[in-house]
Length: 138
Image 1: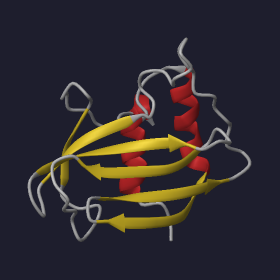
Image 2 (image 1 turned 45 degrees about the vertical axis):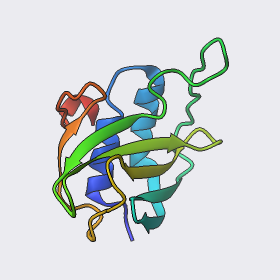
Image 3 (image 1 turned 60 degrees about the horizontal axis):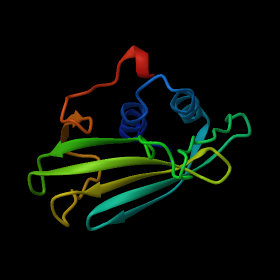
Image 4 (image 1 turned 180 degrees about the vertical axis):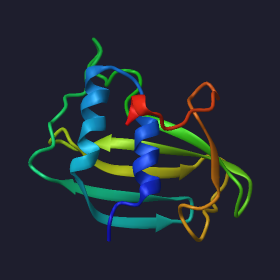
């Protein structure tokens, strides 16, 4: 099984921006390999491993030692079914500094579409602004 195009596009949307650590994470996507996908009532988690060519990233931390604002990178989306709702997709980095999973979580209910990639629209940033994959965030 391969990484689904939907997952790739969601990660690209979550990894918008020009901060060095975000750019490095975005460059890791082409080196990711599908490991497993677990589907839950309220979402799914896709786990990855990677080729040795993936460049490791260090997530910056603030003066308290917590990761900087913006980590984990995320994108929200509306969905049509099984009920109208809002979901969040989060991109997580493993201890080796490479993306190790994509997590999808319902923010409004505990139902998820039977086809786990179906019915999503209006991808939004944290301010509710619509975003889409562009040449700048590929």
